[in-house]
Image (cartoon, rainbow, N blue to C red):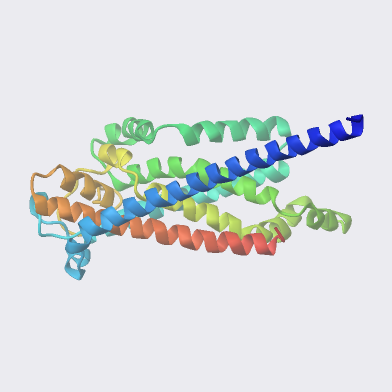
Length: 294
């Protein structure tokens, strides 16, 4: 056998091994993706089957029953959750976007890298630690829980998500657009304001919506900061407000089977809200990638 023939046989053997390895990786990846989808379907399907019987217009428009008894609704919890998440979004989203703009467009690497590292650490802090921190910062001095304290905790949780997502989106803006603006003598701040931000607007909105969806179901901070509230439709941020996660937590602890069904129904409402936000976020993200030519 000549040297060329031996080399050809080795190449064919290596090619077969690479093809087998590639096929194994494809099968493993496909299996993992299918399992992820199956888990989601099982979770959503289980919540739907267990909670759909209690889901009604009365359930959605009636406040929680007195002393947490079954037979009431979650209208006050929906309003309370909306108020707390809205306040948190107003606090976290502008700061997060500004941090991303500064670290991406203006800050030198000696500042940008440490800020990103701090954001990653903050994103990994357990939310119950954030709740305890805000409890000592606001609730203890005030002597009572409040929706504002809960919103502050949710804003702290949202901030690194918004900032890191915005950073990644801003880096996707084509450099040729910025170079063209600089070649025309346009100041960097004006380039950022008129070109970079509008181009990445869809991605920035996507990151903000994902952050809202992330904190909408947070329970641990709310237990410390807004779980002792009065009856009826309360809306003042200075006092504790009802919320869907706390309603689910309390109902699941009840010995009543009806309360358990209501907890599943509230969980279904929360899942529907999170899924809707994720769908909207994906739509904005697709639009943003198309606009940036990705």
